[in-house]
Length: 309
Image 1 (cartoon, rainbow, N blue to C red):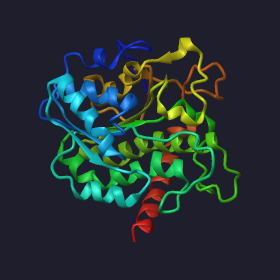
Image 2: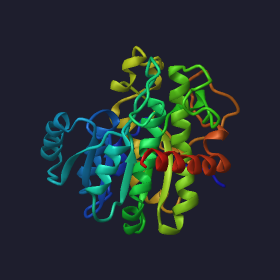
Image 3: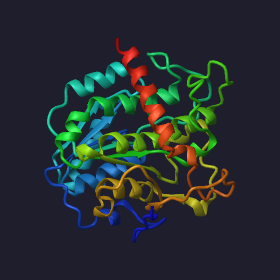
Image 4: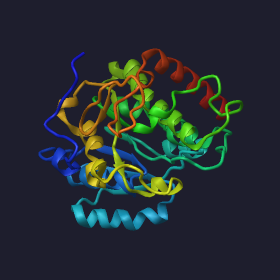
């Protein structure tokens, strides 16, 4: 399979990537779309004419953000909806209140390096439950709306943090393995990458494709537990640059019918044999392994079904 290279790169912005794209009549959901790279993604997609829903934990804080987006883009079709990915009851309520086709779903929201072990309301380790399982439950329930769009794309925001841990199938909730903040984060981001593989495996016949990405090092509220970015200045990005790969995967004709891959700096990433120590990125084989994707999907279906009984 040939590696996909685009005209864009490390310094490209989301605006540059979306130039010439017209999403009028298309519907988009961005989880965590009111801050950080989610906000930068929302601004650019709204400027292309898309109907954008910001799915957020705190709608009252997001409403003023949505107002500014409407004014900045001239697009009135920007909505705010409550979605707490850590709580599967909130996911179910969000889906129950949705109707009609969904053309683009961007799984962007997340938490990082939570210092102490915490559980979601349904009992899952917080980072796995929020970053991955909440998005999986959302995706599963939105399948019919994605299929209705006849060519939907799902974008999964992973991270170079996936290089710190594969999915630990025998101990997803750290019942035996000692909890570490970055290990739990790594597991959740490996699962996020595998989600795109699973979508492509199962749903390509419905016209639904998905790819995962590493947005790069961007100073946002995500690093509140880590003391800020540790990445060298020359390897850091602005939110607009960080959103570029998300926008590429969501909109570019170069990605039509392509799925199950991992991107960074607006190009398909290369597999690495071990975790780099020089912040160069790449992906681990376990994060795109088809067998891991199948196993994770099956396990996740059971977890969600049991939690929602």
